[in-house]
Structures are given as structure tokens and as C-alpha cells.
Amino acid sequence: MATPVTYTISDLAREFDLTTRAIRFYEDMGLLQPQRSGPGGRNRIYGPRDRTRLKLTLRAKRLGLSLSEARELIDMYDSPRDTGPQLKKFLNILATHRSQLEEQLAELQANLDEVKAHEKETRALLARLEKPSRKVNGHN
Image (tube, one colour):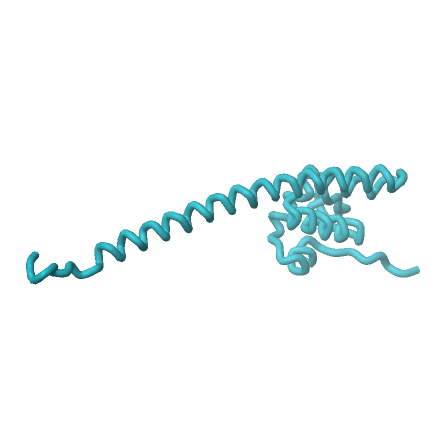
């Protein structure tokens, strides 16, 4: 019988370019559930399920989901329930997140437009100041 694949906290930290502290935080949040070994259970042993959950957690973070949203979605896939409700829930979370991002984008675009208007106005004022004064008909 083949030995199951396991990972140490350092293995996962290296693979996903994380600190061990971040991995322990994800464990505290209930996203990872390693086995314990050694004196007092100090050594964490992660299995393929933990590795997949960590990968999904990081993907959810890149999408901008909160860790609690990530955990809720990932936990749904761990359960033997029908995938229809899981997919609908995921669509709802994505729609909400997309809406928030679109609002942020609109705010950023308005802010950027305002900055551009101020830049244009400031350049025009500066150009007037830097223009040499001309004598009209030989008089000041």
C-alpha cells in the first residue's frame, strides 16, 4: 500500500510563497485542518485535501473574497451535497463581488477624471505665468 502524500507547514509555505504564520492563520480560520504529531501535537501534517483547500483559499483571495466567504464556499465542496446549490451560492457571491468591484472602478474613474481636469487647469495656469510679458507699441 502506498504511503499517503503529506506536507509540512514549510513545504506548503515554500510552494505557495507564504509565511508559516499565514498558514497557521488559515488554520485558525478553519480553512486548514492538519493532523498533529510529535510531542504535544506540535508538528502539523498536511494532506492533499489541505493543500487543495489552501490553493482554493488563495484563489478566492485573489478574487477579493473574504476568508469567511472562501471558507463557506470551500466547505460546501467538502460536503456530499448536490452541486447545484453550491454553484448557485458561488454565482451569488461572485455577482455581489463583481458589483462591488464595478462600484469601486466607477469611483476610481471619477477620481481619475477629476485629477486629469486639475492637471489640465494647472498646466494652463502655469503656461500663462511662464509666458514672457510683451510690450505693446513700444510701451509697457
